Length: 72
Image 1 (spheres, rainbow, N blue to C red):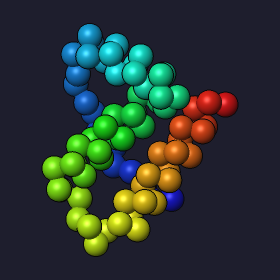
Image 2 (cartoon, helix red, strand yellow):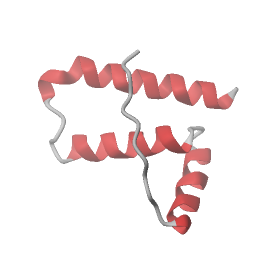
Image 3 (cartoon, rainbow, N blue to C red):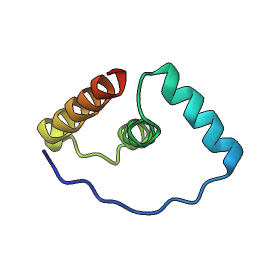
Image 4 (cartoon, rainbow, N blue to C red):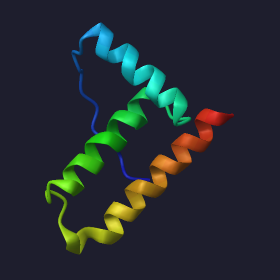
């Protein structure tokens, strides 16, 4: 598994509550849901290179695995 970069994130408490409810609806942790949202935004903005499709697919697989772990 690819090692992930850790960093502190300051976020408005009300926004965090929204993300918490949203992530629960999607059966994800808040962290994995934030990563999912950011990745989708980067794809939509064309910031993720197309020639990195295998790497992107692998990242998406890891999110699904994280999502499955959260269900347990």
